[in-house]
Image (cartoon, rainbow, N blue to C red):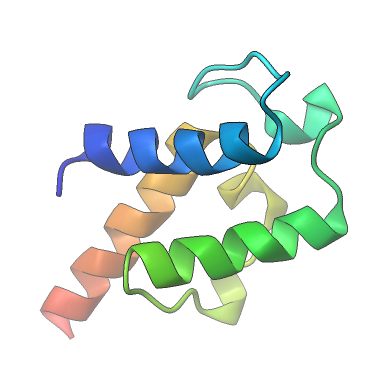
Length: 85
């Protein structure tokens, strides 16, 4: 799975919940005002399930979830960690 595919899946999930929102992979979805703490947890669960990863506690930082690009980086790091470990 490429970074482009990962980003597209993340954007599709977020846009599916907020179809009226206009944003790109680089836009901070928290600052736009659509994301609250409940949706942030849904986002974590979606990422773990969709990409078959477990996000460790030390990676549960808001900066890892601000943009689709940051979430893609997180997924890539965690998938690489599984391959190495």
